[in-house]
View: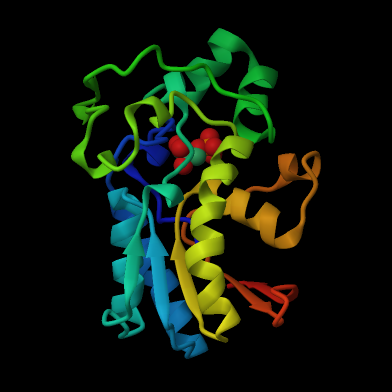
Length: 229
Ligand SMILES: O=C(O)[C@H](O)COP(=O)(O)O
């Protein structure tokens, strides 16, 4: 599932790696999603999320609603939202006015198109009171040369897959239930991979905040059923 609405989703600002918080509406969405999951009575064996509070808080609210806060979880930068480069903190309507509707849509939804890149690694970008220290200690295990300056969906999927294949897949192959709470682009990238969606067709996939997507997979991890609840 994609996290509940963030404060910058509500303001129509690109979040990317900026560690924005859930809005009040996003907290409500997380509780609603958790209670919907509780009705399915799915018992989770493992949970995974990003290093960004909007996803972490959403996961924990959902686990609380399903009375499964005890479930083992792993947080990883590899599930972070795709880095939106120089668009982070920019209002989408301002971006459309500056670069045009078509260009912004391509940056947001195309598979293999990079957004405008951040130049170098600014030690801090403070937008609307949110500071993004490039050398945040939570990213200490990423070599400085690999810190993103702006990712396409393709680049994001390439850094998600090592985690998906090495951590998520073994749980699935063991017949376990896994809950992943991530971000708009990272859920789109994982959906593309799981459902074998073409590079062209992924342009049309939208993922809403706080809507649980439930996949049943066979032992070859082929999708046998999909529900959006
Ligand atoms: O990074 C963000 O702001 C959103 O989570 C995704 O934005 P998008 O829907 O414009 O890709």
